[in-house]
Amino acid sequence: MNWESWSDFFAMGGYALYVWGSFIVVFGLLFVEVIALRARRKSILQQHRRWVRNAGREGNEN
Image (cartoon, rainbow, N blue to C red):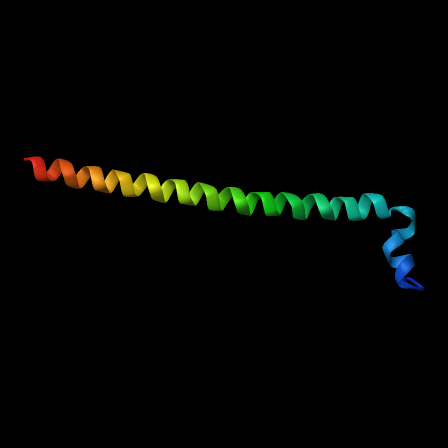
């Protein structure tokens, strides 16, 4: 598709709501996914630290 101006490009031939809305949804979901992955990583690392700490205590009791 060839556009005569930037406003034509942003209008996307009358389908701008669908096109730009889709981009917003995809990038929004990618952002949420990154945040969720960071939170899950932090949780797993904390759980692993607790596990290692508890395993060390049990080894010292024997």
